[in-house]
Amino acid sequence: YSKEFPKWESTLLKHIIFLTTPEEVHANISHNKIICASDGGAACAKGSFRLVIADESHNPIVTCNDPVFGYQPSSYRCEAFGVLVLTF
Image 1: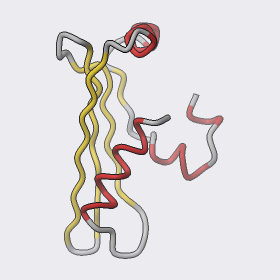
Image 2 (image 1 turned 180 degrees about the horizontal axis):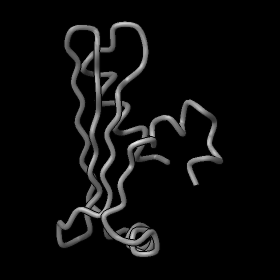
Image 3 (image 1 turned 120 degrees about the vertical axis):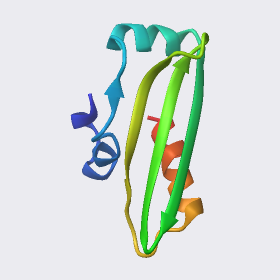
Image 4 (image 1 turned 60 degrees about the vertical axis):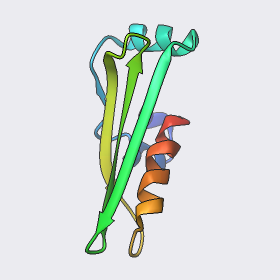
């Protein structure tokens, strides 16, 4: 699925982990029965983000984390990357 995206987008999904079947993830997303959380941080000119998607029972079904690109990433940019990935 992520191979269909442009390189910069597929790079953001490089470390995505499905904790259940893709079919179950799709079913939860299709029925708006998910909870999403993301966070990011930056220090010493390096940044990263992490996100978790959980089902309505708060069981994690997807996680993703990756470095944030760009010159001197800020905490705001890192947090925005996590939210950006949720739009895919």
